[in-house]
Length: 100
Image (cartoon, rainbow, N blue to C red; front, top):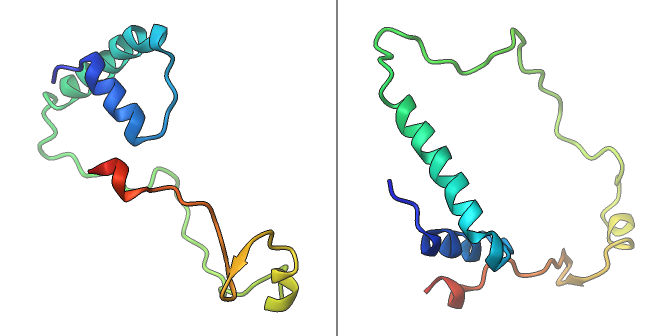
C-alpha cells in the first residue's frame, strides 16, 4: 500500500491530529515503514497455529456493576460543569459536516 503525504494529511484531519507541515514527510516515511512491516507479516504461514486471545493465564474476574463513589445521582450532578435535561453535557467530537 502506497502512503502519500495527502493520505497522512487526510488521516490527520479524520483523527484530529495536528501534524506540522515540516513533519509531514517524516510521518509519511514512518507510516510507510509500519504498513510495509504489516504487509510482511501477512506473508507468514500461520496454518495450524492456534489464535492467541489471552497471553496471561488469568480468568476474568467479574464484579457487580454498581457505583462506588457516587451513590446518589443528585450528588454526582452537583460536580458536573455542564448538563442538559439531567444528563452530563460533553463537547461535540464528531461534526457531520467534516466527514462529508
